[in-house]
Length: 80
Image 1 (cartoon, one colour):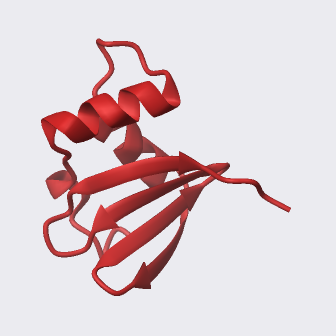
Image 2 (cartoon, one colour):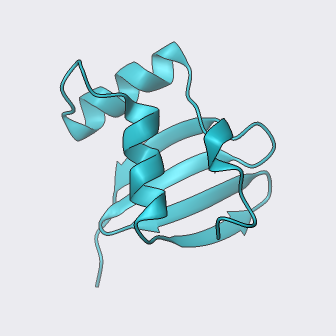
């Protein structure tokens, strides 16, 4: 996966940071982009649909714009 994606470019907007922190309950001193990068690097499934990549790590799905490598959102998912 590291060959396909330049994870050093992975980032989010100010609003995205607040949304990710709120949704995941991350402390203010945690960098949401770095947190998501670690989740992706530590083993995640990836699916590309349209202009987005969906990374699934454990019970979290991280939505990333494929071209800009911007984290759009992170959601908890139910696994069967």
